[in-house]
Length: 607
Ligand code: AGP
Image (cartoon, rainbow, N blue to C red; front, side, top):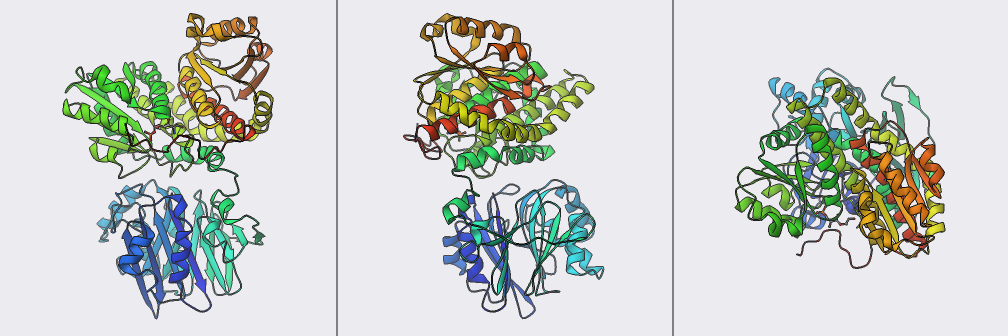
């Protein structure tokens, strides 16, 4: 995700401080970098595409005079990685500079209005509209604080921004809405940043900025106000006792746990996707003679779940295919009437790209769902959606999986709407439930995490696990198995529950742990039978079950509860959360490194 930084010094140059701070934000992932300072009434900017050291080599980021400045590491969401899309962005006069982390949902319409009023734009980013709106507000004789305040009231979406202007050269004005923002307070300097590591070596006195707050930094320190009523907020700094390594994980012991907890934020991001990209994908899917959903690993499990969504909602039969088998299985059948939707968080998985190349050679339409703009998949796909999960550092896919599911369910919903396969009432209900998912996930983590930690202690020494589910939950079962297997090195099997009678049940003996993913949907009756079959053979039943389902809870040795009332096709998102946490805590119990599991790479770029 993007990183922002700003500093106001009482003496000395800001640029080297900004440069060093941006280096400490590199772990967030980025493709370009930039800085701006104010010196003797002039705004000075340097920026470029590439890593910080490369851009510094080319432009010398430290050679920017001035005691006040802002900086940015960009993770592309709107507009490919390039120098012109790099932040800071400025207004027409070149007197205002802005850096931003987040997504402005209504940037297209604001940009159109601004262009109609004569503003000219250099980049394709959503961010660039912000300095131009501030420019207009300043022209109405507002102060910089008033101008920024008025500007953010017109923005929808998520943002952490820092703004400087030659009109008031001693101030940085920053605002937070959802995207993180912290303030660092040192003896003669004050900082704003996306994350504590940026200034931790300079000070461990930090103030966390809350949602909907505006902060003014100057050589007098910091002042916090509420956007809603401009009231002043008093908040004392807290002392941060993290070491730099912990600070990169925002205090979590591992990136994987941090990323499991980030899922509500990431899913909210997927609910802000630009309409036109989803619409384009839906149109291609609607016109397809046949649809293949192609991916590997966790992304394949997202495709498997999506095949139920497309079928149940849009009455579209799709073929989820493990990418490494695509050429063998369908290489000769795929044709000009085929659509291949490739799902890959890295956008670089060799097996998936291989399948895509085969499809392209057969004139099929290739669509992409990925987390990385500028990845190979975005270059070879006819159309793609970026899921905006920000970088996933842990090798095990967690937040990118639930974000993929969220995007795929939106595509299924749009397709159902386009095809008139579901009523408007049903569509509104599903859309409303989708909007509730981030809060449900947030609550679920809060209420179940401690219990899951205990479960991991209880089952730590078990030698093999079953994961069973029916319908769309069979995809959740497969994903839960993969998580446990890849980071806790626990041998595990996963099947559609109905299949367990056809062989796998032969493994069951007293105490054998069987994890059932069993929402109270249309499959409940049959899965109840599977649970009883396993129980009759002495298995230890662990059920991920809907709150209040006393029937299943009474059969389980242990259970984890999911809030009720979720539509069946959305259930994989919340139901996988306990399985992710179980795998994580089993890894801890077994002394494994959840972030760097043995033998695995984050992106498998070899076949
Ligand atoms: C999942 O935890 C693994 N890291 C792995 O299975 C991964 O999902 C697979 O390699 C696909 O990666 P991609 O989404 O980047 O294509």
